[in-house]
Image (cartoon, rainbow, N blue to C red; front, side, top):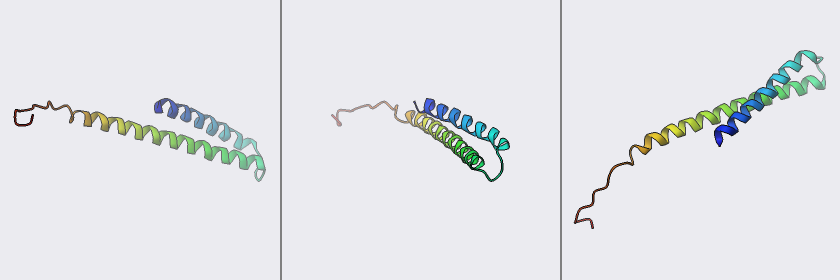
Length: 83
């Protein structure tokens, strides 16, 4: 579920970032449109960085959980003294 959410956020961040980057050359310097385009670019980059970081953390956690599952598979042998 987290993979799907991070993929959706990555797509959203790319859409916002590319759209605002395309609008920057079309706006006049010092106008409100330029400020909004720059803020949208920063927002898009932040979303991309956050989704990539979340994806890397979940991959690291998944690898750690897979490595730890091998340590817990020991067969428990009970003796008469333990029963």
